[in-house]
Structure formats: C-alpha cells, structure tokens
Length: 159
Image (cartoon, rainbow, N blue to C red; front, side):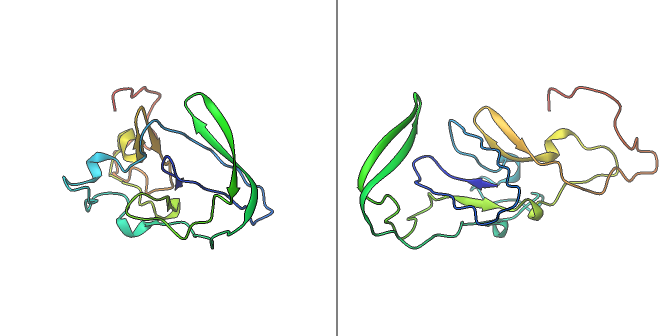
C-alpha cells in the first residue's frame, strides 16, 4: 500500500517491465489504521496486525532543479485541473513534520487468527471516511477440531 495525503506532490516511475497493476482509491479524508488498534494517543496496540516499524517512507528522489514549462495536474472536487509552472514542481528536498506519504508492505501484515471462524473486521487494514480497506491474506484457518472449516453462505452486514 502507498498512501499519499492530500496536497502532496508526487510522481511515479515504474522501473520494472513486468505486468504492473494498480488499484487507486481516493478518500475525502485521511487513510489511517483502524481505531480499535490504537490507544488514546494514536500508538498501535500489541494486538494490532502490524506495528509502527512496518510503515516506511517511500524513496525520496533528489530535487529536480530545472526551469521550463512543467505541467502539474491537480485533482479538485470538480475534476482534474492543469497548471503550468516555470520551475519543476519536484524541486524539493524532503517532507517536513508529520505530513508525508507512507508505504506498507502487505507481507508485513500479521493476520489475526482464532480456533474458530473470525468475523470480517479482522481483515481490516485501514479506514477512511466512508469505507474500510481489508486484506485477505493467507492465515492459519479455523483450527479448533469442531470448527466449520469454511463458513456457510451468510451475510455479515453489521460487522
């Protein structure tokens, strides 16, 4: 996962020639860890399926000190607007404070398990206003001797 907060300028360079696929999701507010995994100060609790060390800042390239005509595409509530700048928009040296993009490798996710079937919220990785992001990863599966190995067809709309 790569999370880019609103207002952060970015540029992706895909260096592999493999079959790349991306799912881009936008939100009206911040993407964050589920509240039930954090204490009152925002620190991750011990039972969370990840820890602070699992999150990293993406590689920051050297500043591009160029002049010319550079197109900047800006998403607004009305759509995408184009601006042209005389200085390269990535003529910056880093992020300041605590507002910056971050990345999480799904291989660092530690699925929550139980002897019997766990409710869907255990798969929740992140939340944003109006939706949640779930990661269905391989895990030790319902290992109690009387557990139903795969739940019967059902709906779980209140989780």
